[in-house]
Length: 119
Image 1 (cartoon, rainbow, N blue to C red):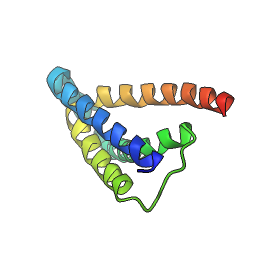
Image 2: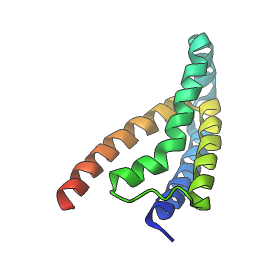
Image 3: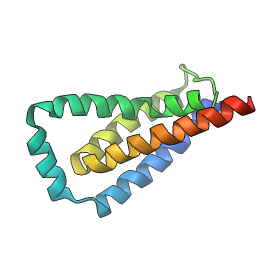
């Protein structure tokens, strides 16, 4: 198993737990109100969320200095499952999705600094 495949599996396992937690704790009524408020911008939000969800395993591989293996069935499956989970999460909890993106970017930046100093 290649390093990027391991990153993909860990990401999907984490993401499934995160989406499950959001279904239990997110405020669905507030999410529905947010979707109604943004109106025409919802398409842009969906596109950005889809890209962020699909690229998350590749982003973490890059940050950790692990070469992304394009021909892997596991990596392709992880990308597709990430997109589906992102849409599911967006339908239930946009705030949680935005929070996950922000935390991922901050932790990714910290990890990148640490790995660049180590390597």
